[in-house]
Length: 131
Ligand code: FES
Image (cartoon, rainbow, N blue to C red):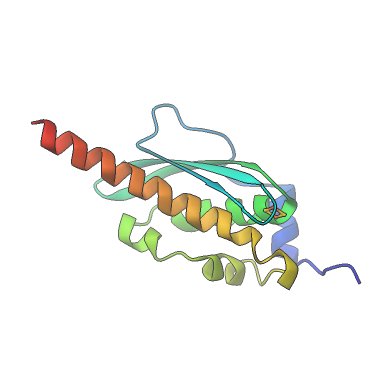
């Protein structure tokens, strides 16, 4: 039987939010999915410890596109600590669920976001030791 996708998944797949890249991003996160080989990249802009802008590019399936789109919506405007609390389960729940066989696709978005935040913090730490 074909997996059933929620309306929210279909909506984010058809009209993904925040697609693309940012000029001079403060943090970049790239994550690959070992299950299928798909890839996703997230760019963030940070001001006062808060994500002010975010974009994604996903070379992956429809579920990966929908979860990436949802993750950008969830993360925008959040503090870095709040954004780090976004997990694959949060994303799947916000999309009203994903078919069991597509749950692995939601790893990409949450993990790429966490990597972008780590990248930003690493750069900040590097900057402060330079002075
Ligand atoms: Fe690769 Fe969904 S099949 S991310």
